[in-house]
Image (cartoon, rainbow, N blue to C red; front, side, top):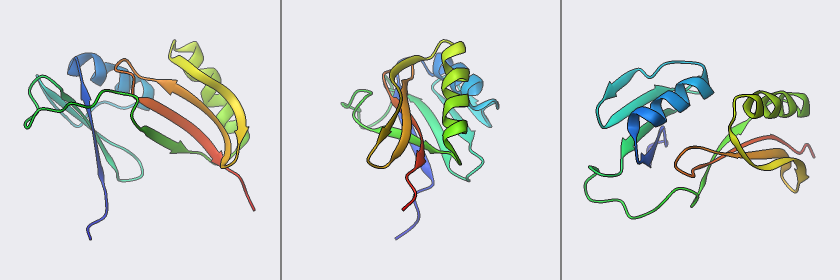
Length: 123
């Protein structure tokens, strides 16, 4: 089975989403068109935002049905990103908290996609 290396989010306004993710990721998209933008993440995973109005076959799912998770190295990094994202005006759905899997917070993108930052609990 091939490795998963692309994440595609269906969005209402690809330009707005491309601007949002360019600011969030602190890097420009590597590809853009009126209906699509693609980002190369440092991990090698590609993140695309595609207009939900033109994707074929039509997408019926809305944002919030899953999460994009960003694993970071420590609680301090979680806290620093929480502060940074809050100052940038991201909608925060969950402030930093300890959960079964680690220390985490949750933000929302303009289309309601969940963005989780966490540092795993060490055994």
